[in-house]
Amino acid sequence: MTITTRSPATPINPEPSGEALAGTTVRTVADHARPAVPPLVQRPRRLRRGEAMRRLVRETRLDPAMLVAPIFVRPGSGIREAIRSLPGQNRVSPDEAVHDAERLAGLGVGGVILFGLPSGKDPAGSEAWAHDGIVQETLRRLRDRNLPLVLIADTCLCEYTDHGHCGPLSPDGRVDNDSALISLARAAVAQAEAGADIVAPSAMMDGQVAAIRGALDAAGHEDVAIMAYASKAASAFYGPFREAADSAPAFGDRRGYQMDPANGREARRELALDVAEGADILLVKPAMPQLDIVVAARERFDLPVAAYQVSGEYAMLAAAAERGWIDGRRAMLEAVTGIVRAGAGIVITYAAVDLATWIAEDRS
Ligand code: PBG
Image 1 (tube, protein in one colour):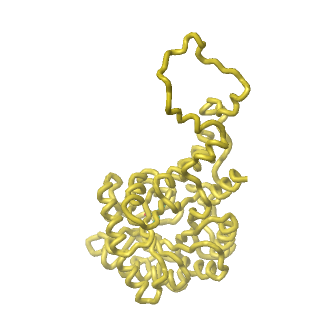
Image 2: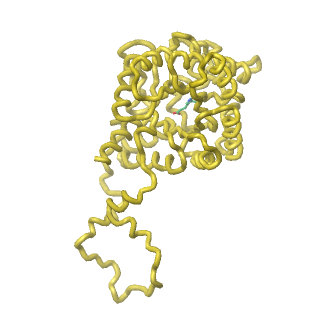
Image 3: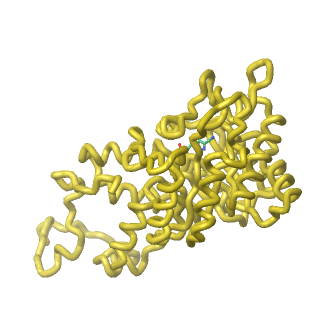
């Protein structure tokens, strides 16, 4: 269990749940003192009486099949290294990644998304497309196991470049968009060859979906889908991930390619561009700070919409739960329910194991 589930000592909301009142007479206002209220026709509380009623009218239900679990893979064997900034998450070698995937499949989780920590980095990020690159090696092992999981590869360069940016640098120190497209396309083809069902370009380079679609098709991978990080903000909530994936930029930041979190119209433009370029699934990231964009993606387009509950969103909940400040289980379920209610049919979340376990418990 990665999220602390103990309830705070004092219940936050001591209001009786409905059932607790059955058989007791509670009078908070003396009958003679009741104010004269007009007859109420609408009494929404009728549908909140008791858990059976609430369950019947519940609008949003979580299913493990809609969850995708990130896996951080590193070279070696038998390795399972805890990630300090993401309680309960690990960097694992490919053999251990197979164990994790087996467990996730057993819980009915829908898919995994792989992030690689390469054996070496260079200015171009060439291990991203190497045949024996860490993600490709792990994909081949997972493919061989033939688990009922969708295999997704994050397609980016920041984990592989020695400067930590999401594409190669031009002489003036900016990220060179059009050279990055060539590298991203090569990486996507290598991932498809290794067995990815979906590639997920996250570099926020202009034209990356079109470049990848063209390269995949040219290499005979017409059936490999693209989950486009269509709207990805330059978010402070990626902090723990950068420690996990060792991908913090060595200088500067990503605001020259990731979006300003303040911009909703621009986010909708990015979504439309990725649809036009051939995206199969639209991903919004981060999730909770960008919920309006999840709504917009769901209302405007008829593609599946995914949302990434990112490392910082998870770490905040895990940390507060560890301190007993919130009920970690209820808070995580509520956060992910909110993301789904906003319109996401797929949620990438570090809490996939916990959520799948809790969903099963709540059903039994
Ligand atoms: C790679 C990438 C990042 C995340 C997903 N893919 C890091 C970044 O953009 O800096 C962040 C995921 C998370 O915080 O959980 N570009």
